[in-house]
Length: 112
Image (tube, rainbow, N blue to C red; front, side, top):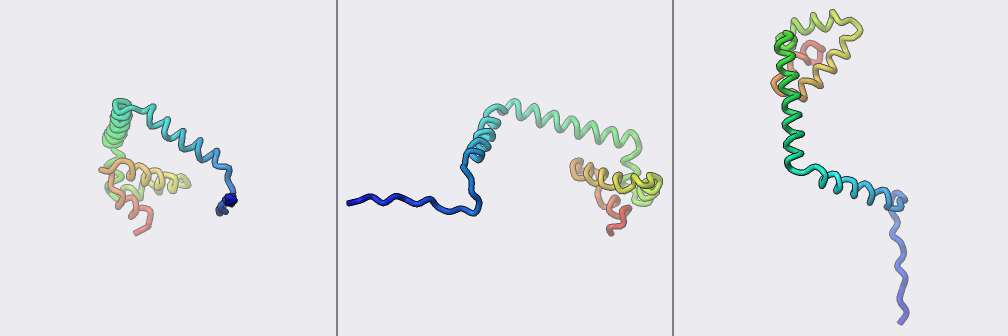
């Protein structure tokens, strides 16, 4: 009895598969490099940066401006053409640092 040769299966995108295997190997090797104590160190460093930024915003008075939509709108209007950049930056910070409310930023930007 003669053995049939299997035909290659057609895929939606031609690939040699080498890059995919290399990418997966990089992920596995990266996971091995960062041991559990190293991950806790990175988490602690991240939390330290978040607390530092929050304290910096609170001490500079910027946190009080961000929580009051009228003061925030006046501050952003004073920035002139840099106002939209300020809104995007404040929204990004509000996403990362949870205690900063994003509702006044949305009100000041005119989204609500």
